[in-house]
Image (tube, rainbow, N blue to C red):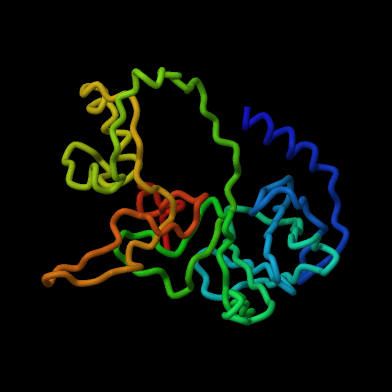
Amino acid sequence: EDVQKYLLWTDEMRHMIPLDCIAGFDVRPGFYIYEGATPIPNGVNFTVHSHGATSCELLLYHRMAEQPYAVLPFPENYKIGDVYSMIVFGLNVEEFEYAYRLDGPYDPGKGLLFDRNHILLDPYAKAVTGQSTWGKKVSDKGYRARVVRNNFDWGAAANPKIPMEDLIIYELHVRGFTKMAADVTAPGTFLGIREKIPYLKELGINAIEMMPIFEFDELSDRRSVNGKEVLNYWGYNTVSFFAPNTSYASAVEYNRE
């Protein structure tokens, strides 16, 4: 159903034409109700909400680059209320990363911390780069976002609809569950859990509940205890609520610096 809605929506977007040109890119006002970055035919719809911002810039980066190859200021007429939205045409989602810069008042006493020199991660990012290896500090370039097409095909998979009273739930930590397992090809990853499903079924488990799986920084509270380095293992310090933690990925496409 989600795939059908996505295909219908993108098909409806094919009539959209550019209305302006910014930094060499054809653009037009975007779709304000779609938060984050949404691919459409021949472009991407970027929408970001900020209460108090006086300006917003979209930064486009080549994969793994330190500096943006393009900076696109949102025109004032591309803002409705607190929401900036812009369609940028001619973008290939496989070839770039993005971030934002926002300007506005700086008054810590009122909780206003705007600084146009700070590069900000899209809070609605569905894929994040910058810290792909467990225990390795965030890249000097910081976090960046990737655009993800919401067109995953579930095939014949279906909700098993197991009655609540029949659920046997196994709570697990993605990394901890298989990190030391010798019988999986990708220990400490989402794939490692998939490879252990037959074992869980043998135990009678019919549902699993994973501890935080969203992008988080395990080094945020790093310290030494009795000469041993201790990390924020559990993941209750989310960086992005819509992006799977890249250090739990087994493939390199979205698990790279």
